[in-house]
Image (tube, rainbow, N blue to C red; front, side, top):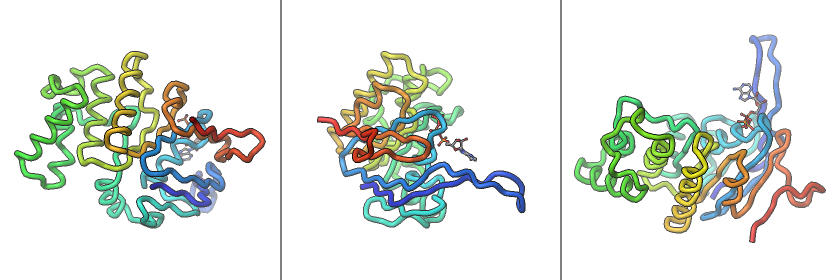
Length: 237
Ligand SMILES: Nc1ncnc2c1ncn2[C@@H]1O[C@H](COP(=O)(O)OP(=O)(O)OP(=O)(O)O)[C@@H](O)[C@H]1O
């Protein structure tokens, strides 16, 4: 489903003519199979978000290849990525990125509006998903009128409304308390079971990491593989 081959990434810093290249990812090879949950851990600054941004098409790698759903997306333009994401992936960020002037219902419905789906069908799908995520009674609330956990559910509703086969999540429970976190993790696992969604989740948190069928670690921009002495790619039973 997701295949990264020999990915390197370096950020350019400084003025033109006096640039410095700061290497962040080195020789990353990773395959995530359909229906798998892969969790990615690593110290702050190790390159986790950079890797997820490459998989989500928000950053183009300095070198290497990215294949998703059997397409070589490495050289896609922003427009191609936007179209590709609409069909293939939802993305959940730590800060939810909800639109403050829109209700939970409107935030969730927005991708359907942009897709040109008819109003009755939009309403049916939006209410069904809000119900499934346990937030139907908050449909008319604005983000500022929702708890962190409820906002997170709206964020995930919006990323799921187009039924993507892949969900990427960057520290998705970062601002949740432990009760909301446990509920959120159950939700992710049930989405994986019921819809066979492929999940790639970045986290600092052991509980989040534990829902992975595999947990991988990035250290200093390198993905540590099982054959390495550290044995840090841990297959789960
Ligand atoms: N746009 C950028 N320009 C320059 N350097 C960057 C940029 N984004 C990230 N970096 C650097 O790349 C390195 C990896 O950052 P990244 O955000 O991928 O780490 P991370 O593992 O996700 O960290 P955290 O857990 O703190 O979110 C860091 O040293 C960071 O300073």
